[in-house]
Length: 85
Image (cartoon, rainbow, N blue to C red; front, side, top):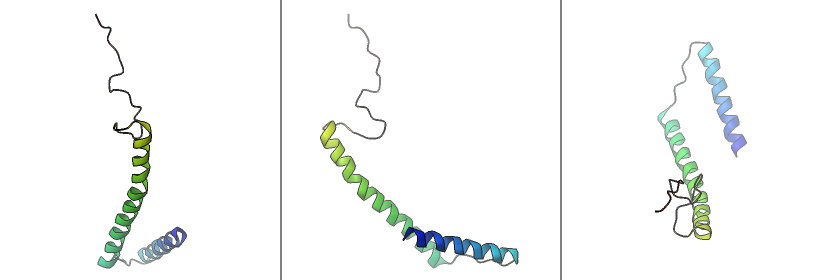
């Protein structure tokens, strides 16, 4: 499916370049802009829904109620310790 989408985008870009060389403008229509927005929303939704379960399972298995994510090592923000008197 991704190959089809990329091939179509390359074909459209080629047609627009050809038209531009002949001083023609092929402007995007409202339907095309709506399609692009819906594709972006769908892709983000799919990525979030797939990664959500990985975050939930990682959170429950490693540190309990502490947040877990990229770059989080479970240590406090300040790693320096002051000697107690």
